[in-house]
Length: 99
Image (cartoon, rainbow, N blue to C red; front, side, top):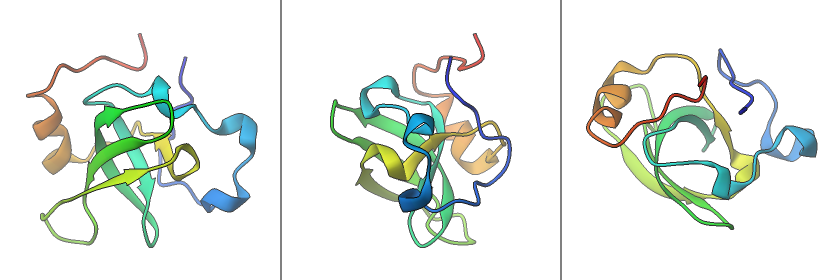
């Protein structure tokens, strides 16, 4: 079961406990995540491989989005709501990380 973060993480990727870092390949399309890009940002997984994930995320305090690739230490599961992104994720095949 993934370790869901209920609020914005406070630890930077280089200071994360390696045992708390899920492998990149454990993520699936539409999974809600936090990604680290100049701070933790809400995102949605687009694709995953054994080495990295591609994420659509909100790079700032506006409705616009960005798409980028991140390695596992820069990503963690998200339980918080991000309405602008989560509505987009509903159009993808979504799994519930709590199930």
